[in-house]
Every structure is written in structure tokens, then in C-alpha cells.
Image 1: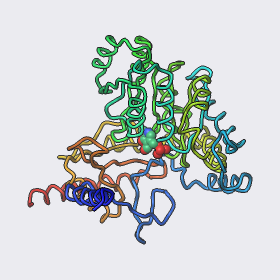
Image 2: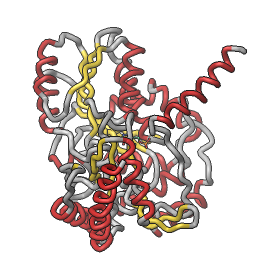
Image 3: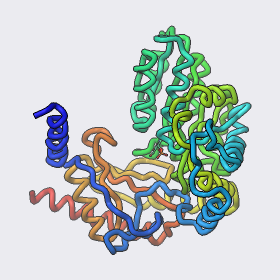
Image 4: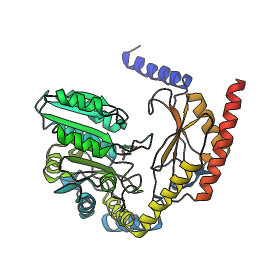
Length: 412
Ligand SMILES: Cc1ncc(COP(=O)(O)O)c(C=O)c1O
């Protein structure tokens, strides 16, 4: 047998092994738009699992804007931005995204990407190219999203950067290491809202540390953009922060309800990424109709309607934090629409997700390696389209299911 066939056989064996460890992931096919009610296999389920926090993914004004964008710009961009794919819609969108952060980043300019994964790879590897080989340290929060981790790994192999992991809830080890760091370029990188726990990064403290030790601070606000801040501009607005050391990343497929992402930083860094950011340069531009739709989405985020949607989320979060109690499972203290319940073992999390499905809810079990070993969980997320009544029904159902799971586990 050739080694190629051995590799394919190995894939099969490893998948079987994942299944045995209860770690095999499975796709579920939705037959309806992304909203709080979804249809799967002809069954209607109440979804508490998407990142569509403001409930915009199926908003009639955005659907209309997408159709108008298609009429105006067609369906494809045809090429990468630097060849011929950069349209007026992309340009308007970047201007608008920069205006959201202009109070927080002097001389702010934004660059639009098709995904947050690509934006993170570009931001980190692009920055690393500005360091002499071996003269860069990256301080990365331990619970950062996979796309930041992969960006850091790639930057580190390309430039020999030294990588330090830090606990975002306890910053003394970060400062202790920075004190001794002699590298010319230092980068601190963290999620703004940690995607699996829902807690916020201490961005004010991180910025203070960055200033003290002459580092740059990269904040991936994938789960904060649209949700945090009075106008929904994100974590920098909420924390009232202003600094030219910040490289801000926002995603547009979550609260903004569409798809894509952006990097916002000082003009010179953005221009550098346009010149040298490989994932930006060598990838086809997102269809302009999407950029056109996102302009509408930004308008809603900043409007009274956006504020009302954020207020609804706040109500849901308060009710959950006040009324949801568990006997064995662990609720996390989070002020965002991400409200995980930690169950521990993979089997328990899978059983809870199955019982929830039978009760008419879609809340998948999140298992390692997405979360640390032994912390399998139900990642419950709220949308502004959820009503208080729907949340209270979920709370009652979860209490009943916790009981059912503990009875089942004690019998086994
Ligand atoms: C914190 C964080 N950053 C980046 C991403 C990637 O964004 P995208 O889905 O647009 O690729 C995600 C996606 O879930 C995320 O949670």
C-alpha cells in the first residue's frame, strides 16, 4: 500500500477514535433562515446557540439591502481587491467601519475581509513582518479563539517570534514576563469577549500594560462589535478607551448579521497590510452586495432600533443571571449574550444536548478542543429576537433536564 493510502486509512481510524471519545463533530442541516425558530429535519426548534445576537440575520431591511446590492453590483467581485474586486460598496463600508472606531483609534482606517479567521491571520502575520527575525514577542491570552492561535503560530514559524501565553484573569505573570523582555517588538493579543465563556478581556488594564512596556495591543472583538457600547461600536466604546497602540478586529457575521470582518488600526498599519498582508492580497474580494448589505446593518446597529435590541439583550442577561440556578452544573458570570453552562464530561454534555433537542431546543454540546478538557458545556447564547417568556421557558426546561441527567448518571 502506498503512503498516500496509509494517510487516508489513518484518517478513518482517527475519526473512529474521535467517535469513541465522544469528540466527533456532526453537521446539522437547517432548512430555514438563521433566527430564534429554526427548522431541522422538518422539526421546529427554538435556537439558543447562534451568534446572531441582535437578531439581524433574517431582518427584512437587510434582505432588501442584499437584493438591492445584487441589482446594483451583481453577485461576484470577480477578483482580489488589488486586481479589480474593490468596489464602491467595499470602500463605503470601510469608511463607515473606521468611523465607528475613530474616537478610539487616532487616524483610524479599516480594511474589510471575507472572514474573521482571515482578518486575524492577516493582522498577526502582517505585524510580524515588521519585526527583525527573532526580535518579536507575542503575548497571547490562553483562551483566545482558534483563529488568533493559528495567526500566532504562523507568525511564530515565519519570524521565529517567541510566544507567551497568559491568563487574562490574572495579569501578574504577563507583567513579570514583559519586565524581562528585551525584544524590540512586543504584541499583546486577546479576544475582547471570550467566545466560549462570555467574559470580557480586561482591555483597560491590558492597554495600561502595553503602554508601560511599549507593546501593541490587538483586540479581537468578534463577540463585542454591535453588542457592547451605547452605540454598539464595541468594547473600545464601552470601556471608553483611546490609543494609537490598538489594532482592533471586529467580525460582521455575528451581531452584524451578515458575514465578513475588518481590521481597524492607524492608517499606516492598514496601508502596510494592503501592501504585504498575504491573506488579504491573495484572496477574492467578498461580493460587493454583501458590503452593501453591511452598510444597512451598521445603520441599524447605530440607530434607536439597535439600541432597543441591545436593551432587550440586557434584560435577557439580567433575568438569566438572577433566575437560573443549578444544583451541579456551573453557570458562568457573564455580562454578554454568551451564557455558558459548564457540565464537565463529554457524555454529560451530549446527553443534555440530546434531551434539550427532544424538548424542542437547539443548544449543541461544546467539547474539547474548542474548550479545555473536562469543561464540556452548553454554550447558550441570546438573541434580541428571544422574548422574556421564551427565556423563562428555557430556564424551567434546563432545571428539569439537569435533574434528568443527574438521575441518569447516578443509575449508570
Ligand atoms: C473570537 C473570534 N474571533 C474570530 C472568529 C472568526 O470569525 P469568522 O467566523 O468571521 O471567521 C470567531 C468565530 O467564531 C471568534 O469567535
